[in-house]
Structures are given as C-alpha cells and as structure tokens.
Length: 462
Image 1 (cartoon, rainbow, N blue to C red):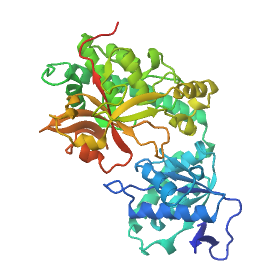
Image 2 (spheres, one colour):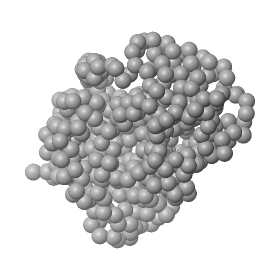
Image 3 (cartoon, rainbow, N blue to C red):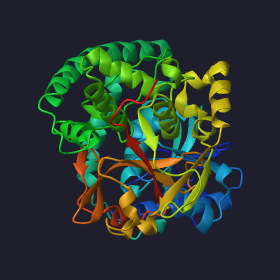
C-alpha cells in the first residue's frame, strides 16, 4: 500500500520510500457528531490533524467530507479554535461515504491526486478503493496520534473491503473515465421511472388525505400528520441538465415537506383535489412566477415564502420592524449556491443560470425573528402570537460553514401543555418532537431564533 506517516507533525516516507512530490491536496473523510452536536473523539482528532497539516504545509488545500455531520461545528472549530483561513478548506456536504467522497473529488473538485486522512482502522480500505478506481491516492498513517493502537473494527473492515471490491467490479472502470452522458442517461431514466412511481403514491396519499379532513386542527398540522403515515424524510436532489418538476409526498426533506403541506392545504381550501391541481400549487410555490427553469427555481426557503406570499398562500407573522417578541433582526442575502457552485453542476456551469442566480441573491430579505431564548415563554405570554400549524423557519447564525444559507431548519408549531413543541422532518422520518422548541435549540449555536409564517385559510389572492 502507498502510505506516508505523520510523525512529529511532519510527513515522512515508510520503508525507505520518499514522500510523493507535488501532492498538495488532502481528502479528509468525515464522521458523525455526538448526540449533543459536539465533535466525536474520532472527528475531533481528524479536525485537529487538519490544523497540524495546515500549519506544516501552508500551500495545502483540505477537502472535508461527510454530509451526515453538522459540518458547521467543523467550520467553526477550524476557524475559531485553530485559526485556519476558510479558503484553505472546503466542506463537501454530499460526501456521505467513501465512494461518494472520491467521486466528488474528481467530479466537483477536479482532483485525482491527493492524500487521504482518516482513522487507522479505515485508511487501508479507503486507499484500496481510491486505487481500484484509478486515483493517485496516498494514505496518511496517523497511528502516532491515536490513543487506541489496536483495530477494533478489523473484521468489519475486511467485510467492507470485499463489498467495496464487488462495487468496483460492478462499475468496471474508474469513475473518472465513465462518460458523463452515461450517468446523465441513467439519471434521466431513473427520474422518469421514479416520477411514475411517485405519481401513483401521490394519488393514494392525496385521496386518503382529502377524506374526512379533521377540521378541529389547522390544515397544515392535519396534512403534516397525514404525510407522517408512511412518509420518509430523505434528500431529494435532481442532477439533470434540463429542469424537471417532480412532486413526491412520500419522500421529503424539511423543506419539501412544507411545500407539500402547503400544496395539500391549498387543494382542500380551494376544492381542487386532483393530482394535477396539487402539482400546479407546488409549481407556483417552488418556482418564481410558476416558471419551471433552474434559474427561476426557489432554491432558498426565503424565496419559496416570497412566491407563496405573492400568490396569497401564506402571510408573514414576523413584523417588518422589531417588536416584542420578534426582537431579532436580520438582513439575509443567501449566497450558498454561488459560493458552492460545484455542488450544482451542470446547471451552474451555464453562464446564464449563474448570472440569474447571482442576481437574485443580491436581493436582500429583511426579517424579524423571535430569539431562541424567548421560546422558553409559555403559551399565555406574548409567545402565544405563534399558533398551532404556523411554519417556523429557524434562522441560521451567519457565522457558519454554509456562509450563505439563511434558514437552518423548518418546523410546524404545536402547543402542548403550554409549551411550544413542533412537527418536523428529522433523520429518516417525520415526527412530532418529544422536546419543546427551546430545549431543542438551546445547545445548537447555529440556530438563533425563528421567523413565523401562517397559511391563509381563505383565499385572498386576486
């Protein structure tokens, strides 16, 4: 295997071999956080080693993968604790496993020659996979820095290596050499197939949801509960050159579930309950002026709400100027897409799309929000301005790795015993939280408060 050893904070070759010349890129494989959103020991060590290597090799760039971790804490640790300039590292929010991390290094970052930094028990398999796929990868032996010297994952890694080898043989060729059109055609066929499956599922869910609607609760709460029956929280991505609208009531994330809930509520409110009606409402929420193109897609939640307000579907409860309990004020100017252009290929490679998105991002969105400390107030206080079924957009601290994401998470309000609880999409499920909003947010430093939107029960649009 091709390794170098990290010893006394510098790299050295093993078994008389020299450190490779000209390699100035390091792929750092991520790991999960602790339940309290702090760095796990494994991840803490990897982040510390990034700081060591960054100081020892000032011309290196680090690509840190792992979308299952809340990578904002990684960003903050590197910048605030270790004083590593943010331009020295990139956080890959899509690298959810070794294969995907390697793919992103090639497809998005155009890197095929790099070091791999991960734990000792994992490094052998990681380098094997990279080499099998045709990449010029070198593993970094960090055993001198690890407290655990033996490998408790030995058999797990051997079985995982066999599985990886099987996957490589199924691919049969290095990822870097696979035709882009091949992947595009596969994705297109999959999208078309999924659309037919989703439409069949949507029809069943729509018919069930519209039957015997419980008018004792807000429509947004009722339809969210309907989606909880068999709904799966997952990431919905669409990597196609042409824009294509797909609605799925069964596979949602924290944003699309809110769009689904609003579309269902509008169908019931207006007595338009066919699948075509559902898609029409979704289109008007999901796209600026309902025009289906990548440039007019509402990529940020604030854009979604701007379209929904313009259409007369929702109203913003947060006042224009600070007034208790909406004492927080923020001028939002989302820039995540232009800062992370590589995540939105091939669409953002189109100059017209890029300019259109950049122009929309220049339009600031001012909103007031309720600081998280005030979410501890009871229902009979001023916090009672929030009603059951209201959509709460969790405002994101701007000092975060995303640097341009305005909203951190989305919730539907539910008062229980005088305390503000919520429905939301989390992990792989939709649920009513067993903790109140204040308890949920108090230790999450990136969640600084909530802006509030309310569905209009009566159509006031012209």
